[in-house]
Amino acid sequence: MDQLHLYFDKTVLSWLIGVPFLGTFALLFTPRQSVKTIRALSVGVMVLEFLISLHLLTGDYTSGTYQYVASYDLVPAYGISYTVGIDGHLALARAAHHLHGRRSRCLRPGRA
Image (cartoon, rainbow, N blue to C red; front, side):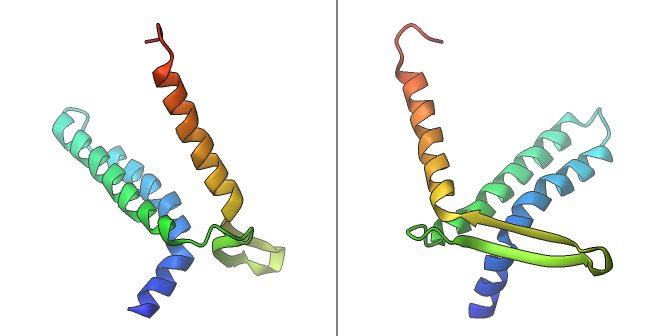
């Protein structure tokens, strides 16, 4: 189980980036007339994305180090690589700012 947890720690951000692209690719081959299938696929991708993102709550956001870092050499001869990670303080600050902004917009009187 620890191996699975370590693997998911390293790949969670790649999954969060890739799942919407895979869902979009699947929508390309869905007939326009099957509205129920399109909606079900869209909701399925959203739910899967949410479930994957719940793993981000297990991070240690007290330090300023990068979390969930993944780095892969794509074309080493040209120095092209794929690197992704989350800065702990920045991620928490953005989440708090986003939640505060939504709440304050909802509480303003006279706004729709």
